[in-house]
Length: 407
Image (cartoon, rainbow, N blue to C red; front, side):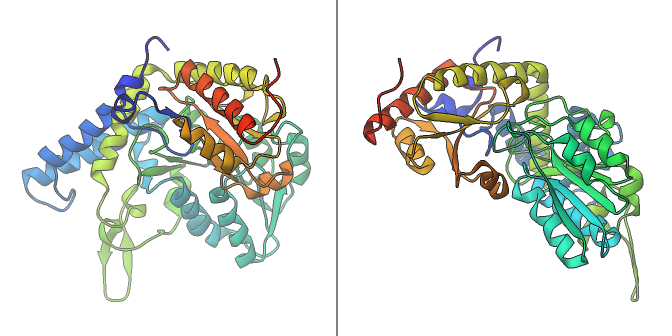
C-alpha cells in the first residue's frame, strides 16, 4: 500500500496494540462509512418512496444513489438488477427458494463444490431433499481447488444448478469463475456464485462474468452489517416470483389477487435499509479510492510473508493453494493444539484470529480435521500483524509444551 490505512479505521486507531486478523468474518469500518451513515440519519432520514414531502424525496434519492454507486463498484450496468438483501446468506436463499422452488424437480441434479460455505451448501441440499432432486458435491484437488475434470464429468442433461464460491472463506482459494461457468453452461445449468469473499478483495465485474446470480455481503467489504445483495440477470429476475410479500414490492392488491412492482422493488419487501445502503456505497467509494488491484496485491504480499514466516514453525501445516491463487487468508493447524486454544493464546497478545470449521464442515471432513485456525488480512493489515501472529504461535508452542520452533 502507498500508506498505512490503519488510521482510517477508528476502532484500530484507538487500539494500537490490536492485531485484527479476522477480516474474512467481518471487516473493520472506516470513518467515511460511519460518517456517511450518521449524516444520513442526521440530515435525510425518512421512509423513502411513500412520502409526498421533500424529506422523503431526499431519502429516496439517497437510497437510489447508493444502489447506483454499489452497482458501479461491482460492474453492474443495470443497477435495478442489484437486489438489496441482509447479506450473502439471504441472497442465496432467495435464489434457492424463488428460482429453485419453481424450476427444480424430481430427478434433477444440483451441483455444489466441497469448498462451499454452509450458506451456499445447505439451501441447495434442502431444496434437493424437498424436490426429490440429486445433490452432488464436486471434489477438490490436493491443494483445495475445484477439480474441473471431475466437475465436467458430473454434468448431464438433468443438471439444473451449479453453485460455487468465487473465493473460499475457509482456505482462500480463488476459483476460476469463467472455467466453472463454462462447464455449467455446456449443459444449460443455472450458474450461482457466492461472492462474499471476493467482492471485498477483487474486481468483480459482474457484467463480464458468465454467471446468472452473484451474492455478496457489505460487512466484509468495509460496509455495515445487515446489508448485502444479489445481482441477477434481468430476464431471470423478471421471470421469478417474489421471495417475500408486503410493503414496497406490491403494485396492486385486489381482494382475490395481487400484482408485483418492477425490479428491484419486487424482491425488497418492507421498509428499505437506507442508512446501511448509504454506508455500503461509502465503503465502495473508499475501496475504489485505494484500487481493487492494489487491495489484492497488498493482501497477497502479506499472505506470502505470513506463509514464509509460519513455515519456520515446526509442526505447523497450512491449507489451500499457493498464495498467488489465494485471497488474504492463511488457514492452518499447529501440531495437536486445538485451534480454539491457539485463538485464546493469541488473543492474550492482542491477535484476533478465527478458529473452528468456518461454516464449512464438508470441507473440514475432506481435510481430515475438525477445525483450523484462520488469519485473514485486509487493507489495514501490515507486517507487524504477521510478526505478532508468528510470535503468538511460538508462545503457544512453549505454553503447550511442544517442541521449539525451527531455526
